[in-house]
Amino acid sequence: AVGHRELGRSCALLDQPVSSLWDYTETTEDDDGEKKTISGMQFNYRFRVLNWKDVEIVKLTFPVNVLVDHIFEADVDEAAVKKATKVVYVKLGLADPSESHFQIMGRTVLTMSREVQIDCYGVTGPPPSPPHSAECELGVEYTPTSHLDGTISVDISFEAWDPGRVVSLTYWGE
Image 1 (cartoon, rainbow, N blue to C red):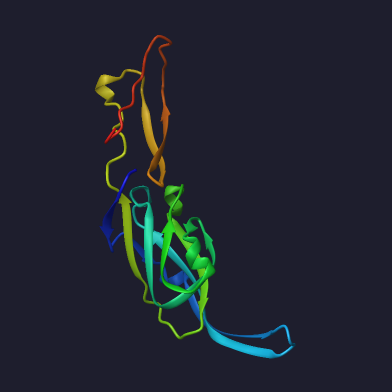
Image 2: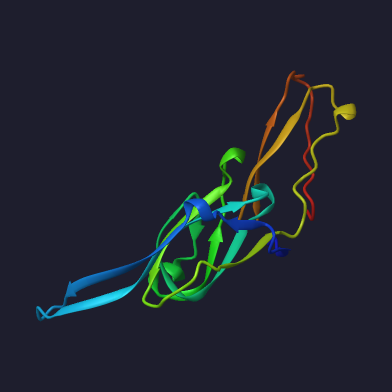
């Protein structure tokens, strides 16, 4: 299995202009018909990942326990959806380079600020090496498309093809 290396805190940022935090009050009724009022804060945060292809996991540490309601353009650790937690792990997947962001919506019963500590983790090894253009007249283009749970997906395209040619890929650590 591929491990993870810490990429630091400058890998992603909270996109302040399109993120929001607001007070909410919700009245619910229990099984006995008794009304209960809950108040707290809801948030809709958009995070921009500066180098998406190098990041596999984004760790968000909130100032208070939060419950995640929705996440878009990524996957969230299921524990954060089931119970309130300060730390939420977000797993990144494929993204268009022009859309290197994910959005997370949630709530808390406490007052909170917009401050979120962000840590990123990438795979411990580099992606497989692309063929060197001087070594391959087939016009190979090599593009990593995603890395998730220790795997790496790539797109390889050729400008030309030789039916008798054998192509080998060597992966780091294999």
